Figure: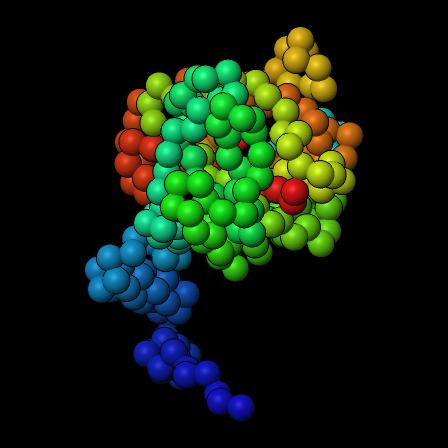
Length: 260
Ligand code: SIN
Ligand code: FE2
């Protein structure tokens, strides 16, 4: 086993101060050394205050039975999730689907995984082949799978193995009306929904359309999971406000993991 390197500078200063047994306040000197070392690290790495910048804590908000909002759950991996989305979109581009009623959706969509959710005048369905490219959807990145599984587990659904990830791209003015996710073969698996980029107002209602939905602000890295008795809850996204996000520019991205 390798020994970890000792903080030589600190150790030797500490030792010499102790051996001097002078009236100097050892801890005050150490504080100054640590603070100058902190400044040196910041200026060398340009990474800000590494000592003070602790990972923001995940906060859980219960929305209903078996429905949770985990604030900041994927905040740390957001940049790499966004990068993976752009890579997926190189293969299966974002497109504005048409609803069975003939409306062009304001949200642009693509998918990764074994099947993708799609819509046209014939109806909503899952397709193994991307109708736009005629080829399979890009595979679901391991990072996506792990995120979906750990978030589902936190909500009380261990062992979730999604086979579809619908990727929604919202630009300012885009919205998604209240709906239920009901094109899957079974409702025993939860929905895991990850927000990236610009913030949005999420509407989370009940099992009937007429129930007044709660309005929750979703930010970059927030994850919502709903399943069990809440699996068919009505939900949607209010008209996206204009803005600029360091990771996504003028977009909000959403990953929705499901098992068909
Ligand atoms: C969806 O219901 O498919 C997306 C929800 C969201 O964008 O947060
Ligand atoms: Fe949905």
